[in-house]
Image (tube, rainbow, N blue to C red; front, side):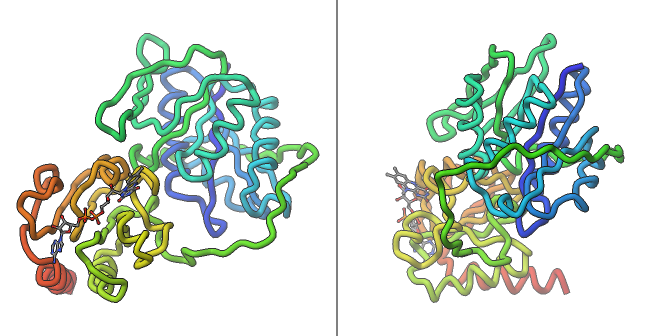
Length: 322
Ligand SMILES: Cc1cc2nc3c(=O)[nH]c(=O)nc-3n(C[C@H](O)[C@H](O)[C@H](O)COP(=O)(O)OP(=O)(O)OC[C@H]3O[C@@H](n4cnc5c(N)ncnc54)[C@H](O)[C@@H]3O)c2cc1C
């Protein structure tokens, strides 16, 4: 029986929501293809958490633990994934299309000289083979493709696939670690995000654009985000102006997000921003210009001054939430 290998990701030593989404998706595919699911967990102290992946459909969890693996090092992580591939002999290897996954998946594909489909937004089994949906031209069109190579490497866009619990129990095994060598030396890690909710993991995002006008004015965006338990996002215009950190940038040269609700305040909806958030399930735009591109594309639009609309929204939501 062939296998699907899922390379999971942790943040602050907890599984990212997208890890559960990807394992659930592997389970769905495995059931259609008659395969098993093995999840790989890489880190320095991960064993205690590993079994929880069974609840999302993993049959087996492989743990790779070493102090060297506490932080992402592409050389070490690539070596570990290749070792897991040797052990499990998967037909499909699933990564998450995060910054880490987008770095790691091509390295593994190149090392194994095999096919890669990145940032996948849809997966179906058609006549026993895998049909992959993948956005092109900044999300303007979607291609359907299949990989012919014996090992198929995919990265799945976070937030697109449902994380579904199915109460399975996984067997947890340790992966025998190969020698870990790297020419990369990590000298210092500056965590910009702290413990704040990352845009790729958030179910609701409130984004501010150039219309917010200053770093100080982002207070009203933060207040709306707080009452909604949302993450704050930013356009590149905002990040380039140094009003917000780069880890909040959404778009072609930022992060790709697919939340349930994406609220855009004072952002025009440029094609480069759209590339990062078009997969949002519901888009709300607040813009004073009725001709702004986002007004035509959003599910709901409020044409008005964000400095009046956003605080009023915050107050109303506070009232509703009591
Ligand atoms: C190669 C490349 C990559 C890029 N990558 C990205 C990327 O990853 N992410 C990204 O975001 N951009 C990216 N850009 C930049 C992109 O082209 C736009 O310049 C940028 O998205 C515009 O940001 P904005 O919507 O905040 O600003 P603007 O386009 O200036 O829009 C500001 C909006 O605010 C509205 N507004 C102003 N005042 C108010 C008010 N008081 N109340 C309500 N509305 C108001 C205006 O009507 C306007 O629609 C990229 C560009 C290039 C060339």
